[in-house]
Length: 162
Image (tube, helix red, strand yellow):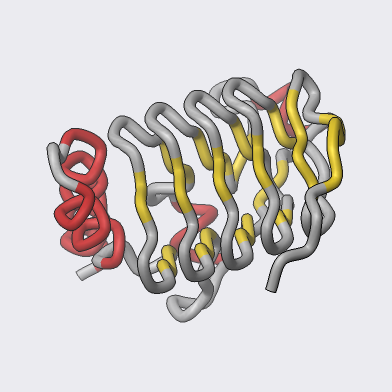
């Protein structure tokens, strides 16, 4: 059963990456059990998501856990990477020094993530924030904030509009 679930999640992921229409991408991503997507979201093509399978993920966490959560009205540009897990795969020496990080990424309502951005494990992007194209987000983003750069740093505070 676990093998079937891993394979089906991976196939939905592949379809979501290359689907020509947002509705198909959203449909496929909602079929992956560790992802939650709110209403009226737009997910650009060619996104990268981790984790997809792996013994650590399958054995350590509850099936109900959501490691990538999108709020309502989130816009994600093309080629964005969401890295929920990061660890040295094939080096036992490095694994002893740095076992890696495996944490959820949470994106609140009304967030816009520009093309090519990278969001690392454990980051929360608060409501009404903008992530500039190509930014590497290593820390939480406060509400109503524009961040850009490598690593992403605040460059502007947005006015509150209700």
